[in-house]
Length: 199
Figure 1: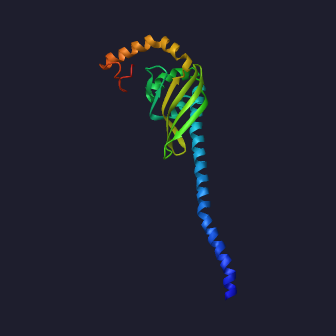
Figure 2: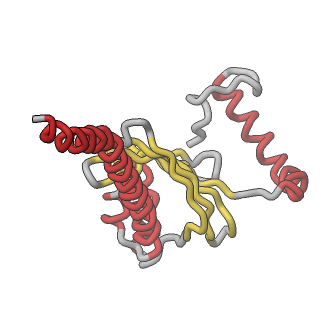
Figure 3: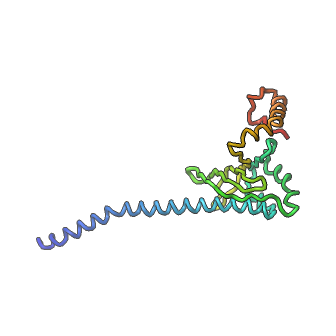
């Protein structure tokens, strides 16, 4: 009996050590799975934006607008360009009908996911006919598919050129601010989000 006890003691000790290791192994597998899921989400979201830009460059109207949510908004570079999806479709249709709409190639991109991974907000640096522009916005996840809910396109202005650019557009901006103030009946420095539409 004493011999059996001597033999079993190291075996029991080994099993205890082995079982104590299992939670950390399980945790590592879980972390690896989560990391892979994150990479998959990033890839899917990024590919959606790539398809969006490619559809515009190749004038695929249905694909382009199929990647936008029904209540999506496109904000263009002009102060008056704040389009609902139907408005943007009306604006874009003649451009797409010519066989080439616009070409925007992402050269840098950042993706930021919500805690539940159902939303992603992004910003990307774009090579366009207007030279470098900034694209930013929000996408929502539907299974493995993403839909663009908002896209904001802005030209970039290097800091050393800002004073010159402001001087070029100052009279236009002052005139527009005055029109907005008159239309909304508020002072120029109190303009809310509902008064910026100039169409």
